[in-house]
Length: 287
Image (tube, rainbow, N blue to C red; front, side):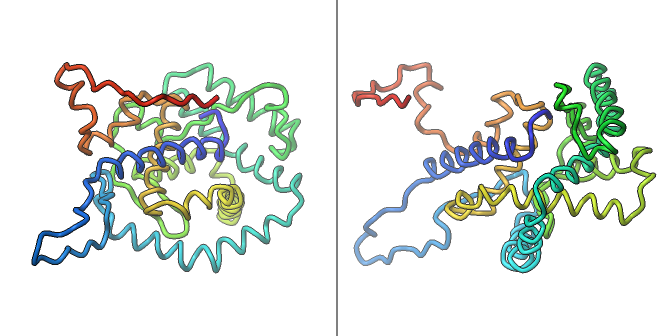
């Protein structure tokens, strides 16, 4: 994956919004007036956002609420705010160090994905940033035009057709799937990572987590205005995961496979090889 965390997540959020919009548009509306002598049924939830990729949804929703109502407002967000007072050059340098530590894993995974050129780029970045960049504090490789070719073992498994596994919402950490989280564990076992002690590993995860939490504040209004926050985050994650696996260019059939479960009444005419109804309304072009 070549683009940054926030950029990729912005694209994923847009895809999630589109997916949920289509889901809502395909949900039949309840009758406004009930038949005589009958009482309108009480609907606890107007829309059904269940997903076959999320067999643990009940447990995951509880985990999401724990994070949303307790862990984030009382622990994670205040910690991120405190970390945000650190001068930006220092924050950027610390984050660069955590990125540099992942380069050896990218070398291995690029080779496993049969991308020798990308592996060579990752190796070159690691050498340049570890030496001229003072252990990665300064990202001199990017300034010289050597763009990061980041890959994880989870992405490697996905490239070879290994199923994602069930969706999981980890308390305080966020959404993932089995091969994504398991792949991160394997990446941590790459020989360079073993040179670092447990406190250093915890520091790496903490810095990355706090930095990402600060970046996510830009997207909070969209989350708060969504119909179902949990479903919104889930869709955003799956779009983000596909972008990672396909290096930012997922096939359209993979992007919208999850929409096939909804009843697409509007395209029945196409399925029957008939002409769609002519639209007599004037189209509006937004430039």
